[in-house]
Image 1: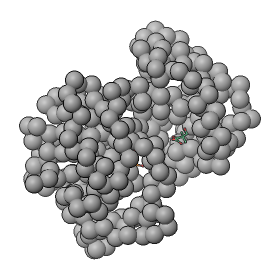
Image 2 (image 1 turned 45 degrees about the vertical axis):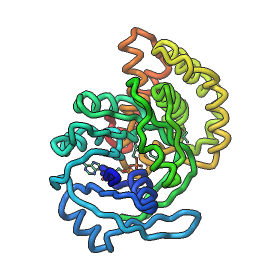
Image 3 (image 1 turned 135 degrees about the vertical axis):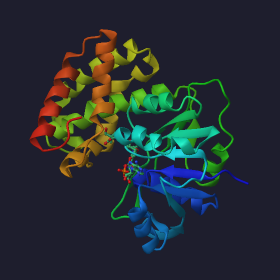
Image 4 (image 1 turned 120 degrees about the vertical axis):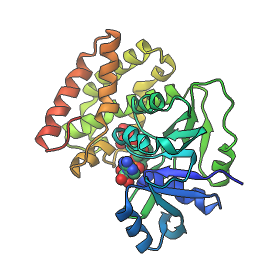
Length: 306
Ligand code: NAD
Ligand code: KPL
């Protein structure tokens, strides 16, 4: 019997994973917050609608609430970074002794917090470049093909269920250095996202602020070296330039969060970089100033600053 994929956080990325796993015939359970959400889901037909290449496909998936007593052996956590720990804590009593927990959060900091709260579970970190959004509840658009890197900090072999991701068409790779992947994405996000908020522009608008971007890349590269992530520091500036050009017409995820008045993941991106600099005694004048300016701007826009 295949192990059930429990999905905590039926938002954009969680729905995208759930829909593809369920479509390939694997057992999947969405874990919803409460009875009201579950009733709404059932009333809409008990299925997620996956929109891919312009075509919508309804995919029936079982759902339950946090309060269900079904044991959880494999948990995919797809909440935002700031929600991951409280969400996991609320179902920790349901995890089996051999549970595996896959953490899809962007940035760094939330994964270690979850792993520390679950000392008996195998926690696998993921870094995703796929893109998804929800035009409405229980509907998800697969907006950007990408890749998922998974890895952990143990010497254990990769989990056998990676073949289930292949069967489900989920592009992935086991990474021997997942922290380098996560740090690299964090650095890219720090060099681009806050500036798009501060300059109120699309990613391509940063071509007008080349010196500011370049100064941040220098400092981020130095921080990565100081953190022992020299692999993640290689060619950072060039990649930031490539990403700015390739995504010139897009608004960054942080820009979109702020535009919609949503809380950002600042604490796990720029906040994590600045906190690591302080912890290591590594000066980061530009990043610290960027953080202060961003917090001020979030406050002005009425968005949570933490
Ligand atoms: P999202 O806001 O669309 O989904 C998160 C879901 O978690 C929401 O439905 C929320 O209600 C749910 N949730 C939060 N706390 C919960 C709880 N206690 N119990 C049950 N459900 C709970 O977020 P997302 O865009 O899917 O992002 C998830 C993570 O993936 C983030 O860290 C994000 O940075 C990262 N990511 C997202 C994308 C993307 O394209 N959406 C791409 C790469 C990485
Ligand atoms: O990941 C991104 C985001 O918007 O969050 C990119 C496009 C790389 C910009 O940092």
